Image (cartoon, rainbow, N blue to C red; front, side, top):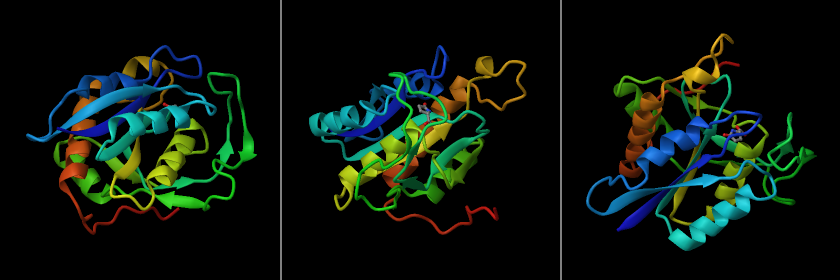
Length: 213
Ligand code: PCA
């Protein structure tokens, strides 16, 4: 049985839950056909430990595909990330109190890495399932981007495709704030559809997914 590693994050910034972990934990053990299954794991929300833990999981599990997910506060849909950049610029401290400003994720590394996932096919599949999704052109500059960059750096040049998905907050996290949200059941369904599309699509489809500004 082959493994697709799917990660979510622990809560951060005073939240009690992180929808990325709440969703992916429900997909742990789900089989996508006879020969491949999802293994879900939770990452710490800390610059010092998240990337190392992810690298350790990859060494242990030898996954055939890796998709990390995180909460994108203010996101209104399932956001399939296109690019990870080589910069940490934290607006808030992480869960260990670290707040790096304008440091490199990997000193001497390339400015950016593109995802190796078929992001357009993933967006199309999630939309066809009746759920909101889009290509996102930035994963931010906090722990999610750092983990995404570390992931792409680690797997660059290998056959293991990888990338990152940001998800909206849960409805109960945004009550009274006017911020967008998505119900947990929709996140679970949307992520499952996105992962399945990623696994089944060796070559991405050509479809508009850009932004004017
Ligand atoms: N979201 C944060 C870090 C952990 C998470 O779930 C981010 O977007 O960087």
